[in-house]
Amino acid sequence: MNKLGVHAFVWEKGWSHDECTRAIARTAEVGFDLIEVSVMDPKQVDVDFTRKQLEQHGLGATMSFGLDASTDISSNDPEKTKRGQERLEEYIYLCRDFGATHLCGILHSAFQKYAVPTTKDGVARSVETLHRVGEIAAKSNITLGLEVVNRYESNVLNTASQAVEMCKRIGLPNVRAHLDVYHMNIEESDMAQAIVDTGEYLGYFHTGDSHRGYLGSGSIDLAGAFRAIVRSGYQGPITFESFSSRVVGQPLEGILGIWRNLWEDSVDLANHALMYTKAQLKAAQEAQKQAERSRLL
Ligand code: MN
Image (tube, rainbow, N blue to C red; front, side, top):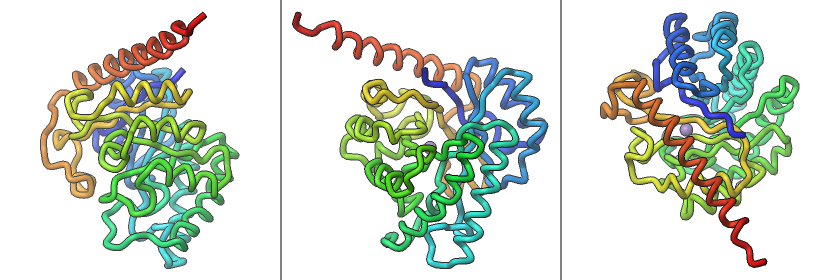
């Protein structure tokens, strides 16, 4: 069974005690299985406080972040690579200490618009570091999800097939591809086929829509995406990600280009996303059964 989650930015832009308390309580009230905690600076997280809040509400957690220019593990500057490894380890220990099962996001390169393409050496350096930190994550049963993002947010992983190849080179069962329909809608030729082809390498999934607002209110073929998820046999987390200038401030609104207020009411947005996801998954599961029930005797 896929655990269903919601990105913390649906509720709050930071992770102070008040923000953490509200985000976790609301996630549990709406009925999600987990919250994806996302901070740009690991020092923002009070580990013990967060763990207690999660336990109190019986809620699971995952975590996401993106490396930056000074911690870019695909760069040819050994200092940046070293800092990137340290940063990744810091987040892994954070996940271990508050009980997050997955660390995902742009872990393979900097979360930024690059001016030049990556290189074979850049990819190899990223693979090397991710192998090292993947082994550390495995000791705490943490899965690393390498998020495939559009061309304006990384020059290393832009398509699902690139992520599968990178996972193969890393060669660890706990380092998997993290797919996101928003990015796939920009880069993939055939989103559903890409999800099915990722198959056992799929380890984390973000839903959303073309404008990152209400699920189903944009132009993405979500029914097709959910059918592909079910066809692929994927059993991992599915997390709803949405951004509005109502919540997100700088520096993230600048990096992600969040200029519009796409929603006001986080509770309504999250309630709808959970209902929509459950309905789509149910429909996709029934479609799969229908195919099995309709074989010629
Ligand atoms: Mn995403």
